[in-house]
Length: 164
Image (cartoon, rainbow, N blue to C red; front, side, top):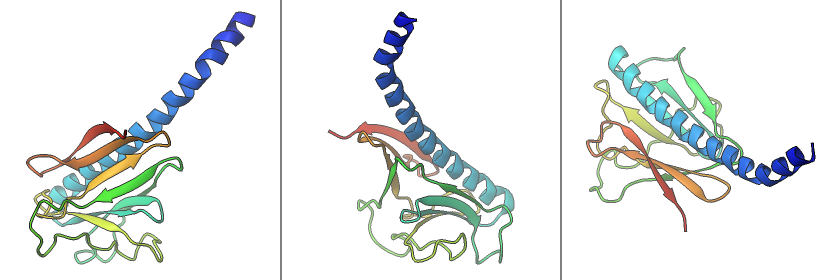
């Protein structure tokens, strides 16, 4: 019994770090899955989809573009884990023009008095030029996972990096 207690005492800090890392990884993968779902819905339904991110409300979700349907019964919303931070970075390497800045999220989804960023997926599944910010999830231990547009700008991918 004493050996078991010693082993648990020694390994518990490592296990705590492991589970914190799992939260970061799970949140990034859930967001990445939502981008794939947005593309699939846009293509299959033939209407633009909006993946909105509200950093103040600590939530993100997906809904059909309100200009095409008055209400989306398939709209979904997720809350960001409490021990994670979300950062949105708009790329400045492209020339500015219409659509180069994020648009506010729709008034739906109970996001009162908050600013949001919207990723709009076209009916062909592509992101419009200039509407593809990088999304960074930061854990409590400054470990980060960044979701950024792929080279062909047709989807997002996870990039791992650690702040120094």
